[in-house]
Image (cartoon, rainbow, N blue to C red; front, side, top):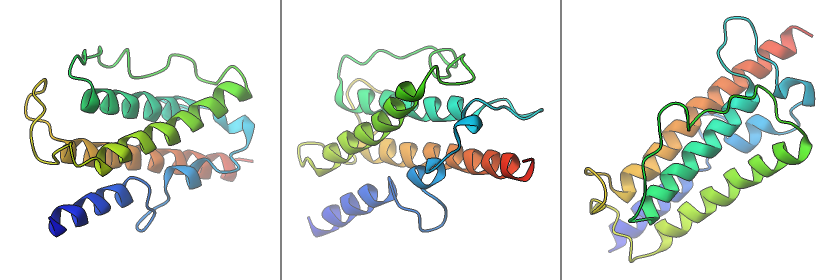
Length: 158
């Protein structure tokens, strides 16, 4: 039991830590508005598209983990926004808040002993809560790295 509690704590920590790199909040903190919808030549996404993709993917993973009636979405159409920039500040702020809220909801699943870390979901193809937590952390870290890179590009081209 102690080992499982330790594993649950580790998974909760890994969803928001910044030991080896910036976390999501740090990557978007004080982001200049004009950076949100910019897309440098040769780069396929704007920071807005990366943020929305993180939000959508995390929500999808959360939905899969807690919803036995989960319905798979079309890849990539349902996972990437078409719009290069958010329509306004409220949409931007709501997306950031949704990422924080959904991450917290996933952490609540990790806190719930009714959710076995290693038991495959009946509606899946072998996925477990443990795997889904690692998937969120890994996926978010990848796109946080892209966000940081875009910020550096924009800062250097001022």
